[in-house]
Image 1: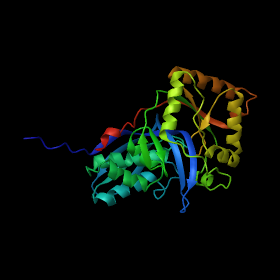
Image 2: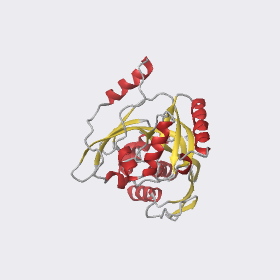
Image 3: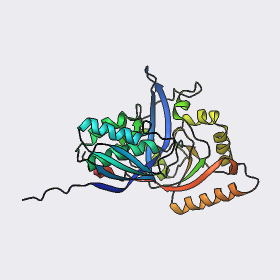
Image 4: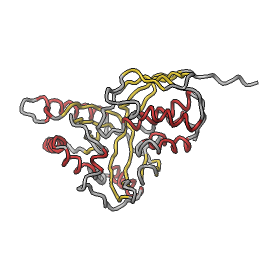
Length: 313
């Protein structure tokens, strides 16, 4: 006779990793105003961390490092929990403790990742048993970047970010340069000067480019981030930060709608050296970047989401 399954009443140190957009093309706009995108998402090991404890009263309560400006009505974690309750009819609730490490308004997907981690963890904690397609359907209701964190792999994304194809990426480390400015994604997408007609590509275009990097004809970047010029036009600090990095001979790119710029490195040690070089430059008296840059971090690229196998496909 098989033993009864163990009932889980708490989950601790549950990660919600950040993401990078290795490129981001805006290829059109639907009649309803939603933009059509093409991008490659990569997870990195910079992560928010959550503790979840099951409640029997159905309430969703927050504690810990919850940003003061993040009301329950705006919080995608709370929204994700409510959606899962509605979809499954569970009577359980949760006490959720936040440890926030991903800067807000940086284009790193912190809120979206937090929402996906809440869906994955609470599906496990409440034993609601939804599979990946069902969780993806809920994720799509929460925001364009949420589904990729449920998908679980680095992905070539199209549509509004909901059409996802898994893709293999080489090992890489990243230096993240975080300006003091924060960016509203909605504001950037509403700008009239945003490029909205980039020629669509195929996943093969990107994979062929990756092969060239290995075969000896490397180029710094694939494509571009169409949101970067609009974000820099809207936030002069971002434009100055990008120009300063270029002046230092550092090839960077903005992720998402900003404000974070990232530099790809082959190894963690190379990233550490570059981070120190940037910090020394920033701390020099004559550096204008010292007034604009809030933080410089290193992060490792991940092959897959750390909670990928918490979901039944």
